[in-house]
Amino acid sequence: MCALDKQGENKMNIERLLLKAADSAKRTVFENLQDASQRTGTMNPFGDKTLLLDKKCEETIVRTLADSGESFMVLTEEEGQLLMDENPDYIAIIDPIDGSANLERRIPLCSVGIAVLPYGNAPSTDDIECSVIMSLFTDETYVAKKREGVTRNGTQVVVRPRTPMEETIISYDTNDSSNQEFLEKSMKVVHGVRDIRRTASNLLDLCWVAGGGLDAMIDFRNILPIVHVSGTHMVEEAGGYVMGLDGQRLLLPIEMSQRMSFVAASNKKLAHEILSLFQNLAVSNDL
Image (tube, rainbow, N blue to C red; front, side, top):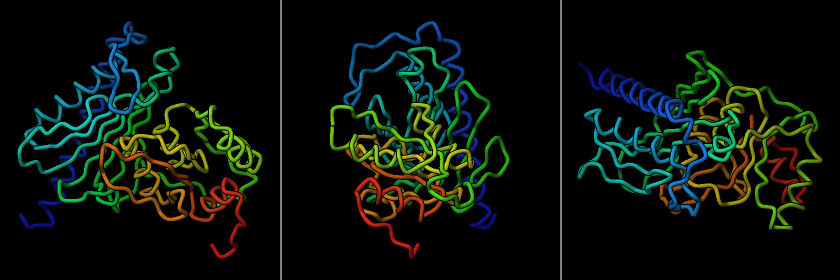
């Protein structure tokens, strides 16, 4: 088998493994829905209270990866960094339940996200090879593969065509009500678009940007954990553009301490327009 064939086979194996792990997490939720509001009494590394189902799903995913025969270092929302092998081949980044507050209230908008990249020195978001995001209560499974695009339930999807900003429908995570300056800046963005949809599962919203349902998803709070990189990867591979608060394409180190702040849009011009509104800057016509 030539090197290219071997590489392709490895990618397929990783994709199948991530789908299996995500599906196992989904089954864990359905089998334990009676525990939806139960907490463990502990805090995760990001300072959030841990739901029992978050913990169970994470354990299920980690166990599936461990049983696969592949070697991983794992970054998880609830446990932090886990070294499953002394010489891992891959890094897996896991958000076991994105939308935990929804699940706790029996609101059926939750997802599980897993991203994988080769293990190495100074890994970054550009190194992600494959991401899987599975909606727990709707029939939607998104797969992003580096330089191969995005599929939803096996069918290729792309971002929406370019739309005037005043006609766009976006998702905006404004869950930072104590920050008055942030709220005032955010209102400028809200007034500049047609409407807002928000599921409170950022990974699901990012998938809807990748699939063309939404024009953009925004989180400018600088508190979102790095475990959400499967979602930004999804938008980029579907042809969109993810921009940081510095106005540059989002490129982050894969570190547990890293926080995310971005606009993930269907195109670079829209990302720039949204960021300019938030920062009260003039919009360039060169994009």
